[in-house]
Length: 316
Ligand code: FDA
Image 1 (cartoon, rainbow, N blue to C red):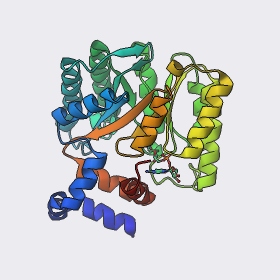
Image 2: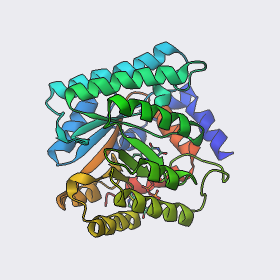
Image 3: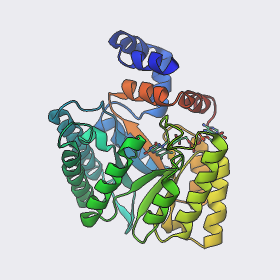
């Protein structure tokens, strides 16, 4: 019931106007979303990189209902990459790492469209990867709900033929993920490990917190013992400690992995880890479509409400 109420709210233009204008909302949104446009995304990137963090930018958009909208989303990434380069913010840090990257949802660039959606998304992702390579940035494909996992991993394999630094995301709550982690823990492979943000059925996903955490630890073990470039995306102190222990045990150097956290969530912890010499990347969503984005995140998994609420009262 909660889910359908939130989804109904996400479609209400009146509610959107009301919520967008409320001073409290503006504060909360500003905490988690860098701003409405490319200029705001560039400004946030400048601030974070001056603080010693690296950045991944996510252009927020509604799911496209036609090709033109998917092209529009692709164009937004191309514009962003040019603007970042113009501002001198793009720089390769190593063969698999760059100061700035973009995170792309294949749904936004066409995967959700009927018919040739997957092929269209691949073409668009290719354009974004080519632009990123040109300016010295990288691309990671965000992972969405489990019905898209196979298609996304197939697109990733295609992209990696021409753009080997393209990153994947694995979600520890999926039962299949430990096996996927083994497949992807190979030389040259960038893999972001997160817990997973969608409300998935028990047939494909672990539902209990302890099971998800146990899976996260197993996947960390696979990735950090493997030959790839693990990107440890979590705010959970227990997972961060487990990762640090594995980093020490495997003798990994700071340039062979990174930590990642969301913009506005545990900023002091991001600084603390960066201060210890770890590469820390802040995932920065931006764009005018933040309303639908935040509401859908809440509807997908009502526990996300607690997650964001906790961040409003704590920076540590
Ligand atoms: P979780 O929500 O399990 O919280 C664990 C513990 O962390 C809490 O109990 C608390 O101790 C601590 N904690 C959390 N927030 C805190 C705060 N603000 N202050 C203090 N303590 C806090 N998902 C997806 O499905 N596809 C994707 O592509 C991505 N991409 C992505 C990129 C990046 C960079 C991140 C960080 C996350 C994602 N995610 C994602 C989201 C991810 O799957 C997950 O939903 C959230 O990161 C929440 O899970 P955590 O592991 O952070 O901790």
